[in-house]
Image (cartoon, rainbow, N blue to C red; front, top):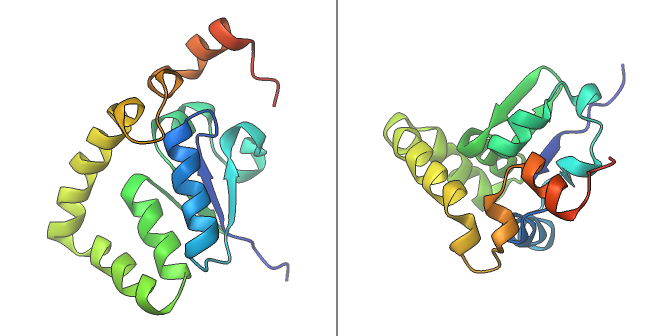
Length: 135
């Protein structure tokens, strides 16, 4: 039986998202592969570009999640302290509040520290401005 590597997919064209991914790689001891969707084999992960533009994604075997649910699974994978935070994100009232908070952050990521104007654009518009994504 093949070992399934969990994969956390984010928007590599967004500086805010990239800054968050770099924090994860430095500080959160997850076994997951952290990769921008622009460099991921989305077909093999069972993801679409639209899903990846909408929210971060977690894929591990048959498990797929997005947004704060994906973040919760990433944290649960990291062990110890992080598992507590990931478990908290799964509690109904916290999960209910996490989605609007996540959506607000995603919609305003270009205004957050590390964000750029490109963060606010869908991929099709980025392609027009900066050249087509060839990944």
